[in-house]
Amino acid sequence: MNKRNYKATFILDNRGKEDSVDQIIEGVKKEIAAIQGDVTAVEQLGRRDFARKTDAKFPAGVYVSIAFSAPAGASAALQERLRLNDSVYRTLVQNA
Image 1 (tube, rainbow, N blue to C red):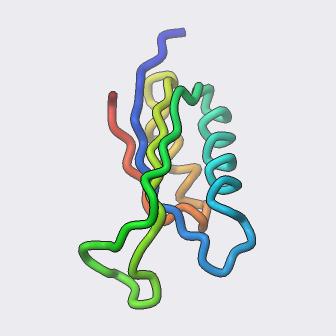
Image 2 (cartoon, one colour):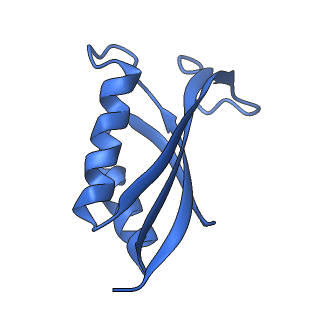
Image 3 (cartoon, one colour):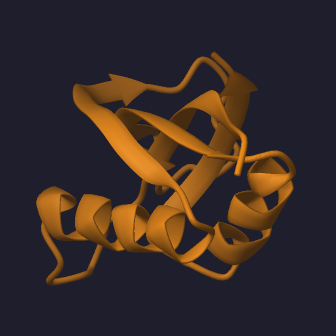
């Protein structure tokens, strides 16, 4: 099977949740594994303020970058799976 390399950036929202950032990242890694992806690197970029706030109660989020390889079409599948995860505020997947 031919795999492509991707780099995904996530904004995590752990407000009012007991899950730590590490636990949320583990959940994202499980979602990547579910689409036959292999995580190659995880980088926590820290908490950053948003340039444009869409929610006054949520002015900043934790940014995480994950590099992974997965079959073609995995990007859309991953975004669809994470859309249902309320701990992941935003997702951006790019070809690496």
